Length: 220
View 1: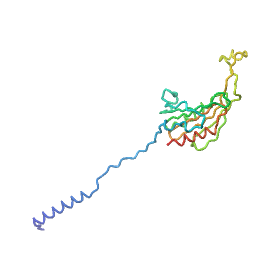
View 2: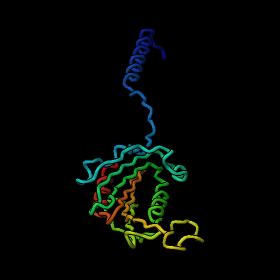
View 3: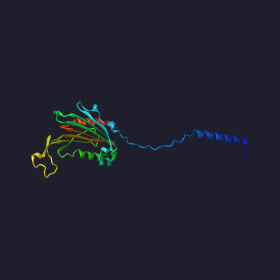
View 4: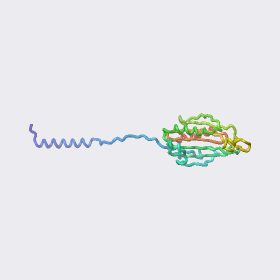
């Protein structure tokens, strides 16, 4: 079949124009990046209670960041990353001693927090002079633990000499020890772990629960 030279040139030009038009209308290829999730890490200092969070009569006496030198070797092995501590005190009723509230905040890998909670509870119940009772708590997550420790007497008689051979041999070899009672609440959310502890004569467990709930609401 014979095709004239002019017709051939015309067809070549049309093909070039069509090709250029298709190229311009094609959407540019945008690479799809994988979406990676990350767990937000809270700043412990931002989670600490302040003077305005506690009732009148309590005074803020300590508020500071913790370093690795402040924690135990076991805590470091469990992945301790960061921490903060806050302490409030007020004179006890009757003018004997004082009541103290301590808030401890720490950041751990989330998978080690159950072990951290178990360790904290064991340490919190370690005083053999106290009788411990579980306390009900709500609104603090599934891992919350709470208990109180009551002393059999406010003044306990203790041997002054640690050597059992000599201790208790006479009345001059003993000490009268004033014994504080305690209430403690342990909870976590994500990778944030907290302990609230109140010591003194007859700790106010309802107040401690209220403060713990305030602190829990601060955790993102």
